Image (cartoon, rainbow, N blue to C red):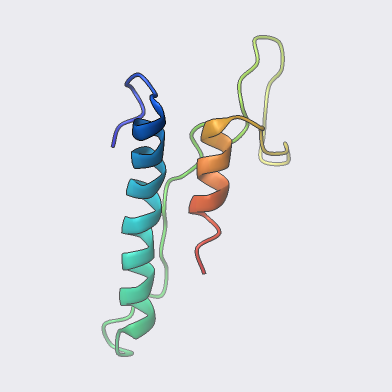
Length: 81
């Protein structure tokens, strides 16, 4: 589900679930794969919105998470075991 749409409660739920569900399936596949089929690295691009937004501040890797919806999605998305 793209984020470039109006965010109704249903769309927000779909945005979050689309990322979490797909990533969970990939992680489960990796965890259950045999040694030869198991990748040594899994990269997921999840940073959009992590830092929040600001017209006057800049952010870098040491900046804390924002406290808006996209930051919440990113935190949930990357906490998949």
